[in-house]
Image (cartoon, rainbow, N blue to C red; front, side, top):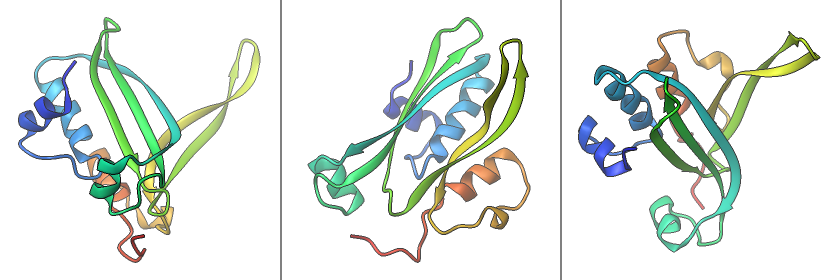
Length: 146
């Protein structure tokens, strides 16, 4: 599994609102990794002093934490991502649809991305997945920092 520094070196940049995570998958796939699945966890946490300083907030301020483990076709972990979002600047939005299974009907997620607060879904124009991810991961410039 790559750590963040190796991934940043591989794509030649630092993480900016999740873009390196998208580019990391491109690098892995170009290197022949058969990326097959991921498990993502979204939870609440608080900022420690280092994170608070980087995000211009107070230590102890609430954050949205997203962790993802990406696996290849052999179910081996190939990428680990941990991203912290300010809840005053982002929201998590999930599209769902009803699917029928042997046991009955259930909800299934169709997408989940951090969305800058205040940005309307209609403002995201159809395009390739990287363009949509970049648009969704732009912070809301109209919001004030704490």
